[in-house]
Length: 329
Image 1 (tube, rainbow, N blue to C red):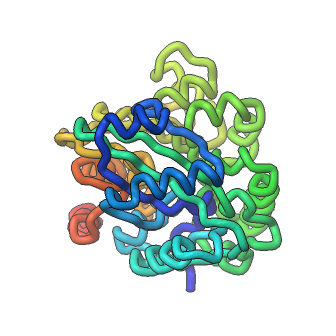
Image 2 (image 1 turned 180 degrees about the vertical axis):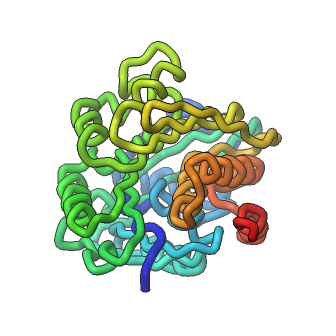
């Protein structure tokens, strides 16, 4: 089987719970922030919120993008690592039900979790336990699956774990040998601050398709505004897509910057919007759409995801979106 996208990222089970603001205060959590937690905190937090859980599903940026590609009718394989536990089994099943080929190594520790606490005002406070996900090693990488992909997709979070960094470097080298385009999502500003010099080298020398939001683009190239950032990125190697939230996106490549509008929606949950945008873009590019057409598809898919609870699109909407973007003639 051949794949539109081979995605590699931390495998995190999303656990969403509806809580009151007092819960956050009692747990010592900053509302709206992302907190990295350790094993004992994971156990305590799960015990606290278990009766309040409203949804669990396979997550993590790379998996969200792979599932978005599959929802559009494409093919995707996801490589990650989970634990030999209930959440690891659920993660594998969730990927399969979403139409993604799971290629997961299994360790003896707990599966990584992203516990999302949703307060009545709609704000989301995330508590992330990386668990086994950070131990994805080079020997776990399914190279035959990667070699059958049209595009490789990775996220900047992988550079935070020495083992995962070694693994993604092997994946990139394998993709280069097979002439497979490499796409990279920069992940977040804190990740860029930790690895900016290395990311700059990647953008200059190895990455073919780059995804960033406005803040990430500014930080990567030391720009004063997003247009300046886009103009600088347009002189570099990759085809660059910069998401601007409700203002759409910029496409920067070969010294040209173009702006793409998005559809106005009432935001319900912004989780996974960037992942959905990347899914739409990669699906479009793999079907010979122009970068502008691919960005328009990404914008529409992201707008849909923002308008509903959860980081992934409704498959029925995604199918109708694919049909509306099908080339005529």
